[in-house]
Length: 91
Image (cartoon, rainbow, N blue to C red; front, side, top):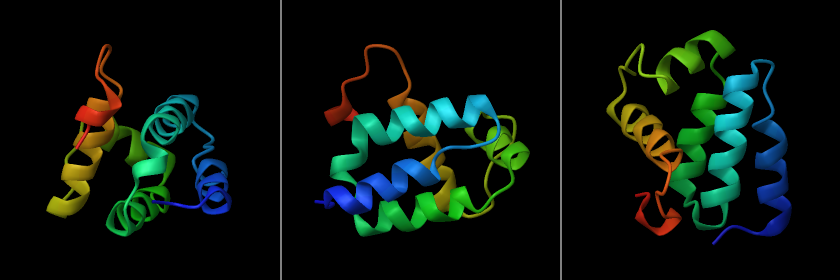
């Protein structure tokens, strides 16, 4: 379980220049942030180092990550944004 201070830092880092990325990442962290593991945080950190356009292409399904870990994590983020998807089901 992640502590509140670290979660706040992650939320701040999820703020992006591209509104679509900002909304997707912020909502993901809001829904799933408290259950993020160290591996999840490392994957999210790698995504947050991407440019906005590259990140959007990955999150929107226009492109697929070469790294299977990032591809799986991006798919997890997308599933979390599916209407009526319960946060507990997003794994």
